[in-house]
Image (tube, rainbow, N blue to C red; front, side):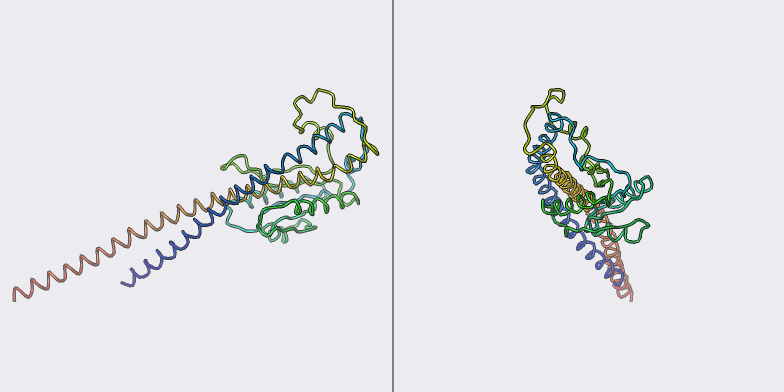
Length: 292
């Protein structure tokens, strides 16, 4: 009976764990849907900024802007986007491995960590952690991206950073989540023009008169563009995190179901064996009494 009691306690613990994993899967599914919708809502605005910058660069000739100048004297800042919570499968481990390989091939890297999990991991690493940010496991907002962009741009303008890159997890589909990096600063004229959603990049852009100057307009648009890129990366990473957690919780629920079924089978076998033994003892005792 003691063995059966232990099995019942184990089954109860597995059932409680199963309820938690199923609930976390549903929550992650809801957050994933919310993150995708939010990104779709703001994407047209940032695409419009990118198209305006592309038209400006293509129509006004060379633009002298500090955001376009490359200076290899400073450090390379790597913004690392991780999660604030665990239980997301290999989501964070993939980012850690990618950043470590990137730091080995980067001159004078410094890290800007987004997420508590990344903070706990890199605080004991050999790399310099310059700043930490956390969003408390909520959907990233424009204000979060603005705060991060202002910090990166201020350090770049002061010459502390010669280059700023961001490492995040891109969600190709629900099963393919891969870390990648993107250059934020300095801006690349060719990439801005190529990435714009113009129907035909070979068509000359319209020649507008920019007041007070093309450089001033470009310098005003550049921070908005950087904020849009960072925001897109943050939301993409958030959606990837929720997708990874949803898959992890789904697999955990399946494993719990299998364990519960195995425990239930063992419990029924032991209980049936106990009942059979009791019946056998009663029949044997009855037969012995009848013989006497």
